Image (cartoon, rainbow, N blue to C red; front, side):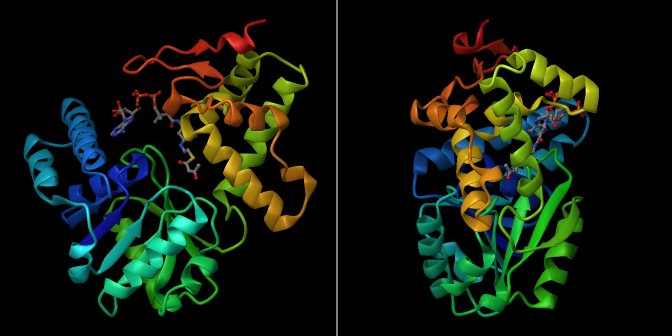
Amino acid sequence: MIVSVIGAGTMGNGIAHVFAQHGFTVNLIDVSAAQLEKAIATIGKNLDRQVSKAAITEEIKNNTLANITTHTGFEGIGNSGLVVEAATENTELKLNIFKQIDAVAPAGCILATNTSSISITKIASVTGRPESVIGMHFMNPVPVMKLVEIINGYATDKKVTETIVALSKQLNKVPCVVNDYPGFIANRILMPMINEAIYSLYEGVAGLEEIDTVMKLGMAHPMGPLQLADFIGLDVCHAILKVLHDGFGNPKYAPCPLLTNMVTAKKLGVKSGEGFYVHTPGSKELTVSPAFIK
Ligand code: CAA
């Protein structure tokens, strides 16, 4: 099956990586040729890491890279059996992309979105095939995380869900099927935890490192919630909390004012070099941002 992945950012390159590694022919599509070049370099680096850990062979690495072709337009979609959209988390942008891919994708092609919180039913409503639209929510880093959260829109056909479940298993992932309500399951539970950690810092209940250490060592989370927020992107966390707040109308989901301030100040976490921590490319060391040094 030919799979077209739209968007060559962190999630898009990870999704292209896992499909290509498992033998699928992949069209990786992005409007920016520079972003595509960067994505292929990242996939190569992540494959090298897998080779050095003996998780895959050099041959699998080469086959994976050979399975991916890059495009700055939608021309490859005409032959695809599946499109996975992983563009920026912006409703208008995604609706626009789905209108365009619906016009060029062949009959029977499944249109999936990697959205972390935008309504699948809303995205499906701008296409002429709402029964073939579904959420396929991968977790970052895609080559490592086992979960695929599969989200049924209001009109998603059962056969489409079954196909996406089977495809996820082919990628050696564990699929979980959920329904289309704000935040689905992953972010409905994760984001209030992150927001509560930010509130705890904002209200001075504990320092930044104490909050992360409690959750890392007390609950065996691989990253504390503030480090994880930096890793996800504070703008993404803020946007998802707004979806929860708007969708449920419950004040408990309102983003913490500290989070709002940090996003306004463009302290977005790993992607901007600073959030709760200062992040140096290539270094795993965690340094608390000067704003939070007691
Ligand atoms: N590609 C391939 N392999 C990778 C990789 C990548 N991009 N990144 C890490 N790895 C591999 C490493 O090679 C290593 O493999 P081994 O265990 O075989 O040695 C393993 O992953 C662990 O990596 P590291 O030793 O470099 O670092 P770590 O132990 O600190 O783990 C981590 C890194 C996997 C990211 C871990 O910290 C973690 O699980 N963090 C939480 C991640 C998380 O919660 N993700 C979900 C975010 S929410 C989301 O994505 C969805 C949303 O809607 C917001």
